[in-house]
Amino acid sequence: MANTSVQYDQAVQRCRDIFEKKMKDYGSSWRILRISSITDQLYIKAKRIRSLEEKGVSRVEEGIEGEFMAIVNYGVMGLVQLDKGYSEETSLQAEEALKLYDDWIAEAKGLMENKNHDYDEAWREMRTSSLTDMILQKLLRTKQIESNQGKTLISEGIDANYLDMVNYAIFALIQLSEKSE
Image 1: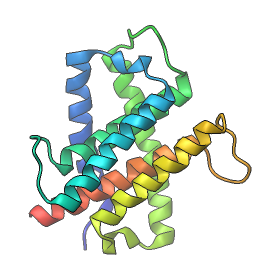
Image 2: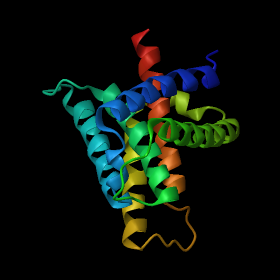
Image 3: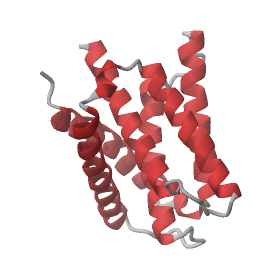
Image 4: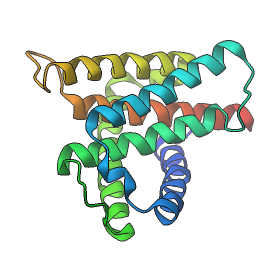
């Protein structure tokens, strides 16, 4: 039986490596993004995944796996922005950004472990395309919450939706990794 915790950490490490390299290339330019912009960026990534799943052909170099990694990374950026607010100042140092990344991933992993226990790893029996659809659903929910100025009557907030999207994307990365082995 697969060890979900180890697979999760391996998928995260690949995402974190990209995040770290992009921090070196671009700095913390992402700090200027408002939450709605991050949500839209996540939406674009998820829509592209769905399009590629349906068409089966990509005309741009980056494939589905890269888009799922981008969802993980933009999800973490969104969680940082929710916590800190967006900033015109983009001088967040790489070390601090990576610490924030690690903190939010630890939060996401803790949530995953709790839900994984309760749901008995049901995601392993799901199609990757269903994980894509669930990410898109979470994005539509998030956009509605944003339209409601972040207020909900009974539902979880934007942060919970971002955490779920991060975890669904990591599950998809694990599934894709298992298929390629």
